[in-house]
Length: 80
Image 1 (spheres, rainbow, N blue to C red):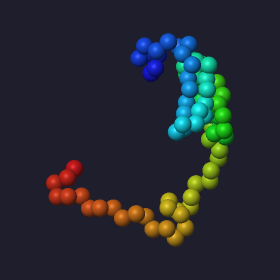
Image 2: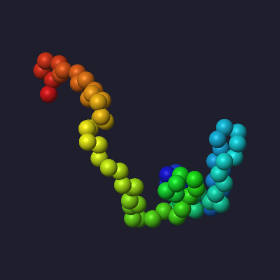
Image 3: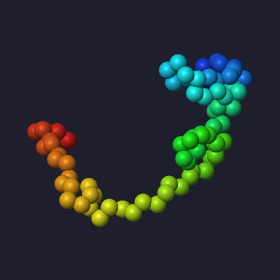
């Protein structure tokens, strides 16, 4: 989006959290090729393939054992 807005792809990218510099990337062009790693502790080059999520067993009951389903508000008269 920055490049589409007319910024030079070689412009350095400085990211701040408040007043603290938390990330420095050599260029916005390089930053565009990065994605968070699977641990959320750094970055890796973007890949076109989709990473698989860790396997999670489905719940036997949709909202957990003994947890009632949330109430559903009735539709107003004439609502689709």
